[in-house]
Length: 377
Image (tube, rainbow, N blue to C red; front, side, top):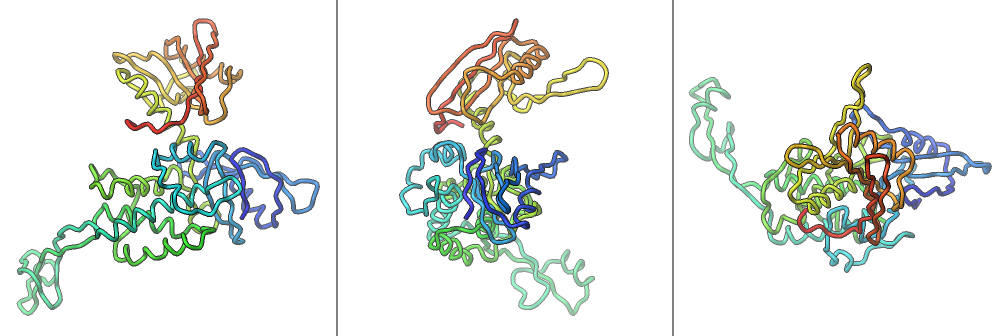
């Protein structure tokens, strides 16, 4: 297994085919098809077959066509990553043995382990079921005759029969969500043979349950026994954070966009910090008055009484005490266009820090925010 750390360059030995495959992953797309730029840089070195490889902000694992498994670990402590990914304070996730990698517990292994354990408990209790109305046009004919179905299926022929009856089935949206996540995890390779066996052992549980046709829809309030596995399933199936199957790599891979996940965390942090303020994510800001129309997208804009009062930008990287020149240009422009005097950058950090930089009428703050489970998010 080739182990990397996000944004850290490592010299690795690759075959020409592996190098070409990784090179295709250095190009993301902007046309909305969802293909991420998983690899930031791949450059050959003076040694034949050796390359300097730098992954981007995607944490997880994928498999190359050669069979080589590439795992990208996070830069921040494992528990911080688990919190960001929505596993919260479930310290029991660390009680079962997981094959440790060079950077500690594998994130993908832990998510799979948490899912498998919840699925095993769910299978022991029994899957949720509901009655569905079924149509029958061949013998035996359970239920009651259906005139509408008879006309549709047999054109009213007197020598044929059509009936309908209620049948108890586990093929409901809630179980479809869980089954879809299990099928995604089944395609991911695991160094731990016991974990692989536990994933495979769940196949009979979800046999006969169809997969979701698209992204998971809101299912309302989940039953208590489905609550944790429902959260894990949504995490696994999140289209924004999963490498598409057509990205030129073997099979289905699990990758998590830590930049996007950090933005979600900052949004929850802002809403908890300012409960009386409206927090608008991905807020468009017109940058020009005449000529070619140009629009910037601010991570978050705070509104009070319908009027903007501050703009925030989430930065998934180590804290800096002062903004860079590019960040000053960006935030000053956003603040001026919004007519506000407060702007801020928010970084993940082990301890809280806060600095202030003044640029004319605009105050730019740099916040270092410890990663904690936000129970209210």
